[in-house]
Length: 327
Image 1 (cartoon, rainbow, N blue to C red):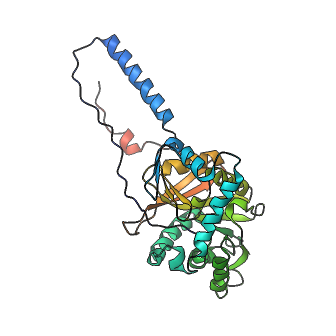
Image 2 (cartoon, rainbow, N blue to C red):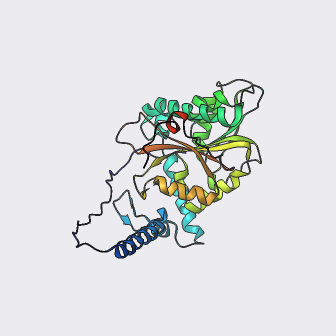
Image 3 (tube, rainbow, N blue to C red):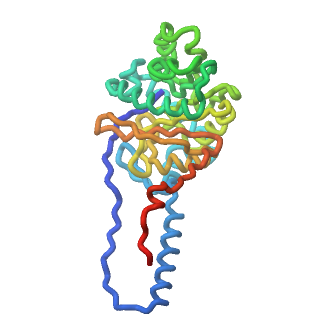
């Protein structure tokens, strides 16, 4: 399953205009007090800018003051399983009416496939070299393709780098197409191994099976709580050194709710807030290039369970030996 690349709205930035007031001179003590007051106010403001409290909009133009307000309307108060079940049922129903093809799962933008795969491959190769391969040639690498659709990413990318790829997809017709598309792809040492027809919010991967869990254009269908629950379950399914790749559309700010396919496009701060709730560490990011301008921006996140090592920067000798002005 995937969700539309198309951005139904173009958002600018919020602006806050302050007049430049000219004040009479003040003494040093007053200047210090004003400076401290300004710093405190700025600190409090920064703490209040919770990404979950930033406003958003739906595809029908309705505005929300916060993500919490939107989720209350869409899935009800906490514990309303009936309404949340309907949210997921409606999402799957939408995609069941879509053609099981690359053009279908990409929302009519099948021509972006090549640019998408090229961007993903550059990102993946760097990560594999840094995190997993390290010159070894006998490693048996396994990946999980989440929201695999018709097997587009597995066929064009993952199966070339991993010995086994498992696919998980809630839309049966897409998974059937993936089996067919991958039947003649790969080899005995590079193959699609398992096909799971299960939605992500209900899926629990096998313990320590995967080197990479690839999540692309599907996590927007999960509520925030189910987003966190999925990654918390999946963390234990990574091998040592393994990592997640999340590749998703980005809202410029807040979020955009698609009422038709029941998905949410989150902003970068919104994603990072959820990653923190999952206890994941941001290892590396990269912007996708080469997509049509009318589409949402797309970003790739590499996430690890372990804390990335700190890079210790040293001053270059050229700079440190440069003559300095004696004050």
